[in-house]
Image (cartoon, rainbow, N blue to C red; front, side, top):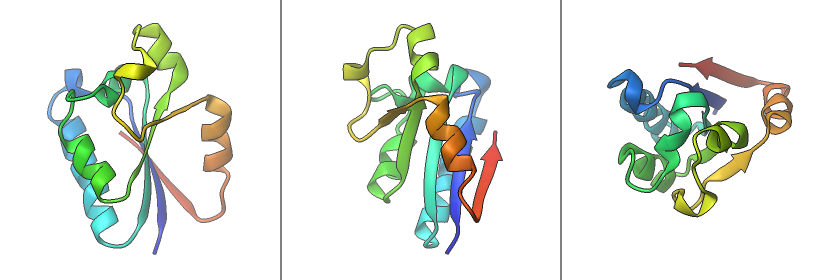
Length: 108
């Protein structure tokens, strides 16, 4: 088993790649890997309820969804509008995660 931190920065406005990236995260989970998905910059609004249906599947499969607090503030997204189970994080949390031994990070 491997542990991944997948970082999505483009989000739905950048095209279908965001949805495919979340699909990759789901496939990693289904294969037995641990996956945290960080939504940052233009991808942060994808954590709003019903904004990106594939997020629900990611969470149902045991993924950990993170969203950057600064990106949310910049886009005036309120915490109460986010999907249940999302974790709002600071860059210190991300830096700590990136330093974990054996972690594989992928930025999209």
